[in-house]
Amino acid sequence: MAAKQARGLIVVAIIVILALIIGSWYVRTRNGLMVAEEQIDAAWSEIDNQLQRRSDLIPNLVATVKGYASQEQELFTRIADARSRLAGAQTVEEKAESYGEMESALSRLLVIVENYPDLKSNQNFIRLQDELAGTENRLAVARKRYNDTVRDFNTKIRVFPSSIIAGSLGLEIHPYFEISEAAREAPKVSF
Image (cartoon, rainbow, N blue to C red; front, side):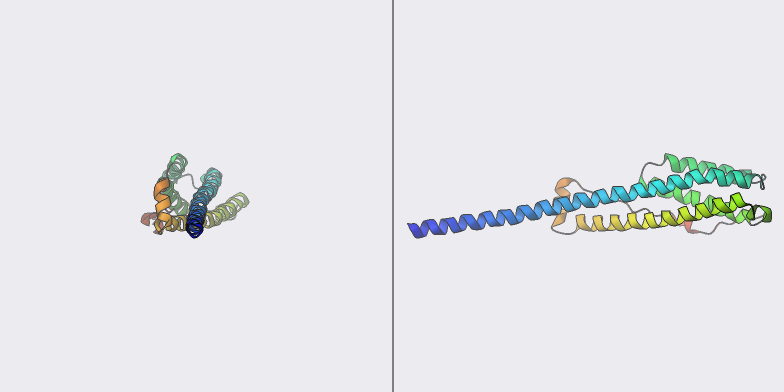
């Protein structure tokens, strides 16, 4: 009888230990997934901050160029439209598409600037161009950080066995911040 009780206690102890191991793994994995998703939100917030900074610089840059190149009204309108679409974008895909449009319009603006030597030497323009270049660099870093964070998260929720927990929590794959193929092309400007 005592041997039976001892075996029963050992079985119960093993079950309790296994339950603790599985429970701690579940909690650790769930918490890791939640932390990873929060990191995505933080990385996206940084992209949003840099897009806003860039959007705030653009009217000043356009105003400076307008004084020298007033005949480029179509371009100024295109920049204003792209800026408003970027401000109104809600999803990652919409922001990426609007970002591409803005990138294309700004590239064309900077190509046009080449025809105005006085503008290129204007201190306000130089300062704004430097600030915009700095913002573009910060945006590139923030975009890379976001995409790296998304890649890590997407991998975690797709790999077994954490995919089971991710599925039970309703976690879904996050989209990457990618620019469109059209935005990758150099602007074509004819005079």
